[in-house]
Image 1 (spheres, rainbow, N blue to C red):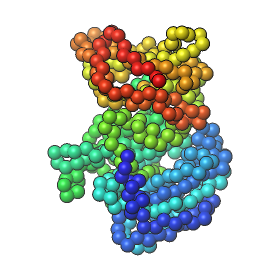
Image 2 (cartoon, one colour; image 1 turned 90 degrees about the horizontal axis):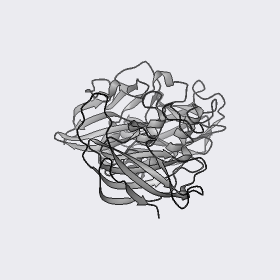
Image 3 (tube, helix red, strand yellow; image 1 turned 135 degrees about the vertical axis):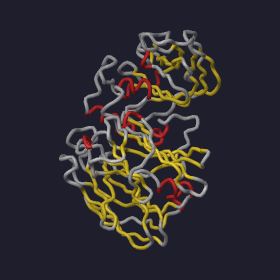
Image 4 (spheres, rainbow, N blue to C red; image 1 turned 45 degrees about the horizontal axis):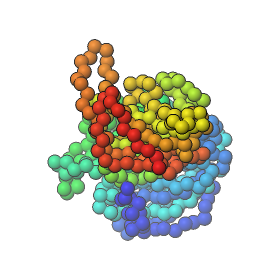
Amino acid sequence: MSGLGAALLTALLTWWTPAPQTDRLTHDFSFTRAGEIVAVIQGSCVRCDWGEAGREAAVLRLSIDGRYSQHLFLSRGETPATYRVRLGTLPPGHHQLRIERDDDLSAKGAGPATIEVLGIALVVDGNDDAASAMAPIVYARPNTVGKFTDLPLLMWYEIVPTKRGRQFRYSVIFSNEDGGTQTDRLMATWGRTTDIEFIYGVTVDENGRIVAEEFQGPGHEVPAFKGRHEGRHPLLWVSTDNNMVSESGPTQIRYAPAAERFDLTNQSREAVMDASPWTYAIASVEMRREGKIADDPPPGINQIPDPRRFVFVEACGNVGNAALALSVGRFSVQSQPALEWTPSDRGLPQYRIVRDGCFTIATPLPAGSRASEVRAIRVQAYERAHEKGAASAAPNPVTLTRINKVFMLDDRYLPGLSLVAWRGTQTLRAGGEPFEVRVP
């Protein structure tokens, strides 16, 4: 990741910290040139806990020069946390940011919010300037308003070269998805309970002119974007329970998190979460609040064990027309001297990886397991399951190229240190011997 973080430091024109305020704050600032503005806000709220019904968060309403900008959820609790938001493209001169508590949207049991503006910056760094100026503004899904679910936590973009120039591709990490893939299958095949969605792409030529726009709509279709803009920012409405977007919608509440740049070469999209480890905690306690965590739930009922029991493995490879799963080898008193193996697919073909590239798998261990007990990872190739009556070709070998990290969550639901990493080229045949990587 680069980009915006560096630009904030090098392009900072006003960086001073007034005294913290409770529930409302007014911050004046000035710039000598027009440009896209990013604010760094620190906030916390008394008694707030995203995992506890009735105390989830205090919600702030932001306005610029008297005009509504966006809402900000203080979702990270009582400890002061930093939130980066876009304020849009502003002309040179004096401006005023006003932040005030929205009592109608705040959890009834959430106490006073402490708010500070740590800095306001003009983004002037090449690609970051263009990418920030064209990042989407996302409107809330109607059935999330007032319900503290499926909150947009982060936005990031990637830059992809095209024949016509380059494309900025924007994705959002939502705290969960209320529809779509069941929770336990999400963990087995995506290694998370957040919902990560590409929402908008814009192609610009060498002169920075927009030549094409697209968005991911209902049904995962990707049509051309023909909706409205605010400045150069497209306006998108979250419209489905699995967080697809549309060009219009009924809600007025919106979000504009700062778009951070990521290069995901040889990494899965979950690496964006790893860079902001608090996202694991938000997702975990939302699962708890929504009743999606149980002691030892069977697969297929939209529940998972405690997320702190899972081993998360990020790996890369070419799966082709086969399928891939892994097993976690754990030392236990009962199994010694052999290891106790826990399969990621839980015996179900649909819980295996069937896509190329980098991916993350999460596997639940028995209650009481600790990261120090993990001794090995086995990777296994399988014939891909097909619908009844569908013809299937013999699976090609799977090529494994990387295991980037292996970790468990700590008591606070934050990722621990990686236990092992591996690089190489390993060929696996469906039904053949697994490949094993030992943990030092």
